View 1 (spheres, helix red, strand yellow):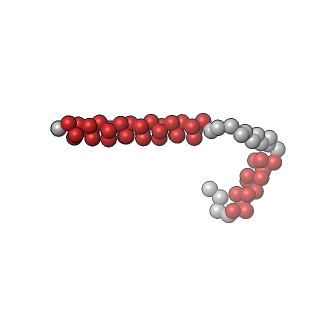
View 2 (cartoon, rainbow, N blue to C red):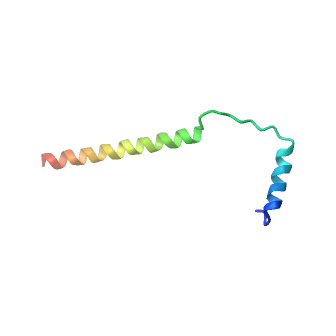
View 3 (cartoon, one colour):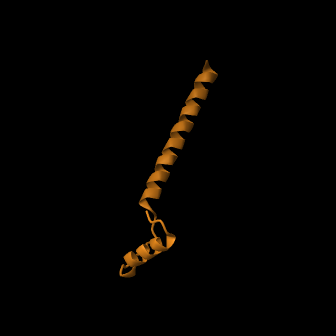
Length: 59
């Protein structure tokens, strides 16, 4: 967006100068949701592998 790193720093400085910055030490909603989705995919794929193995053994 800015061609020069100095301009980027100046623009951010102007934005942040009169701002109040809140540092929140809580779990991120986005990170938790992504982790939950990843865990459900892992459980689903491991369940699929177990079902495939069971059908192979009985056949």
